[in-house]
Length: 379
Image (cartoon, rainbow, N blue to C red; front, side, top):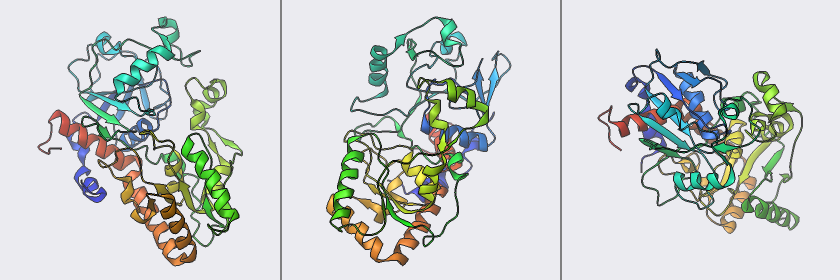
């Protein structure tokens, strides 16, 4: 297994393998965190991101909308899963000769590979609705098209299973907008010792209950935050109308940042992150928002396969394998503030170095180049 630093070094300047520095994005109509990180990074690297006929929820901040592809040059075609991906465009626009890259950023409820997820969506969503619906910027419902003969040349998976030997792990990563609310507070200025923010999933619910019990018994000391937080909405002006009118079809609400939520993270020394559920389903926005806000993330060892890009190397001490180990970590960090300060500062620096959009995009490009054979490097 390569180290983060080794992957980072190997990925440097990987954009040089792509002559046009241009991508055609035929994307899902659903918010997709790892896809957004990649697109933000590609844009920062100077890549043009083309979409067909209209902007996309994952690329609105950087896409160039094209009505005709005749005169465009691009290095590969990128798609992501969930719903609304125009698989028919691969035939309609004669894209068979381009490398096809697919990101599966969807939750994995022990379903297996991306095809099984797609098959599940065909039972949950409308199949092949009228073109008049597909062409809308804001859809009335979720739908899927037939895959036809689509087969990706390079496959990236976020919630990757340990027996998946075909796809490449892709972390959610730190979105650029998270860093805009960073307050640069030192460890001593952060008044909350340990924060746990409840959310969906059995692991979050059980951890919330456990923290209350441990704190009541004084097993976990310090100032604890263990409740939901909301607050003023910060909405990008360009998509404000979509956010306000979308009834959780596209999930535009996921672009909204809550001011009080980020104030909490900026006031916390440690974020406790148990993951989400027992399936290969660990990654979410939470740890990356925390790193961007300057928190040390005390995390349960991921139940997904992260060895392609090991998040556990951000701070190995802050990864626990059991509840007793979790308790010992909390108690030691609280009793050794200098050690906590050193870990927090180093972990945040490493997270921003390796998991911001630009390095994630370079890793993404390197893996594509290796798989399609445009570089002598091998996997």
